[in-house]
Length: 169
Image (tube, rainbow, N blue to C red):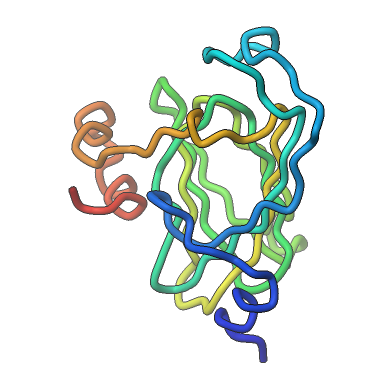
């Protein structure tokens, strides 16, 4: 059975700063577009598209964050992953990404721009390998990490979920 460490080594994954987990960019289009022309509230140009591998294990999780661009998740292998999405108005969407489509797992999930998102293994899983694609492409300057205190103040009814998907400050 493959281990988390086997997958990290084979795919050349690195720790993802701030958010948590491991990643490697696998594609970045050489074509670019002006950020404002595609609705991104930012200066400069963005790659037309990017893709990454993303791995999460039992000792880490993707902390709540939001992006200025839609992000499409793909489940590749491993154990099911819980995803929490919180829209600006406090609407919550919970999704289970995984391999068992017939029991309700989703193999692909869209997170719309501006939605707070976080992922973690379900239960006692060992690891999960996901991928994400973005068009326009990802830029670290378009990433905002969620602060536990600010998010629980804004969405007090979601405190338990927010605490599961953020780190203490």
